[in-house]
Image 1 (tube, one colour):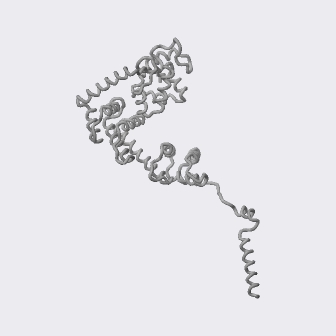
Image 2 (tube, helix red, strand yellow; image 1 turned 45 degrees about the horizontal axis):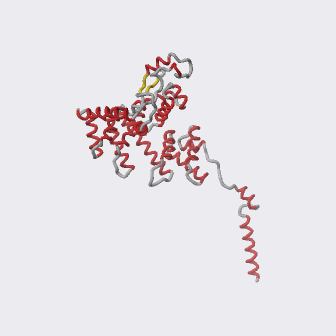
Image 3 (spheres, helix red, strand yellow; image 1 turned 180 degrees about the vertical axis):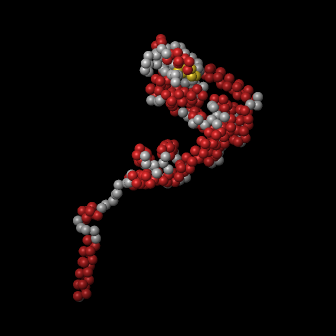
Length: 349
């Protein structure tokens, strides 16, 4: 596969606007945000290979992050520019620098001035209005979304929904499935409250990154999510956590254990050993135990019990003898003899 280079729309002035920040936050992709900052810092004079090395990512990770930025309208990917520049590069990771770099190659920072941002927003609003006025598929999505959410969407909400429809590769049926899922999820978590469009938008980017673009994909994704949540619920009971949800950090631990193939029964063993050792629930200690099992290929409870038994604990009979200087029960026997002699004296008068 040829080495790609990317250019961003606008001039070379580095400006990070609120609009760009909002898009990155909504996407919820840390790798994409990190790559965007790297592009701005280097003013676009680096190749995708150099970006991967600098950020400690592989080529696939950089490509995935670039796709997110492209979907957000924050970058433009220009593979042709890269092909011509790549032919001039020496072996290894050298990138483009100095006068050899052409004006349209590399990773270029964006000039997102408010004036340019407003112009782009006006064009997007115009596109959205045309979709609504012509009674397109997007119009049907808006009507159904408003019906399911029980309220009219604000202009900002319509813009966010239009972004899901226009920028992502989600089929219209998938968007409606997503809205239904978000309604059910948010109402369960927040006492029956409906989700915001911002909440739905964030979920849309998560689905897009997971490759959930068709109705068939969505159904499989939701089934897997249900199974995962069922296991999470069992683990929560195992850890004696009641009347609250996992915190964000706790969720990361639990999700990682589930992804490694551990169920509630295995976690229960780790929890028991953690309590015996520390006297309380210490998440990083329990995580160390579970990661140790994973490295040994032990996941099922019977495997763990058979091949990773906990060392026997407690005071042995030998230790007891050493501590008291007498055999077990010896002190009691002497006391009985003493009492017997005392009773005999009383009887003899």
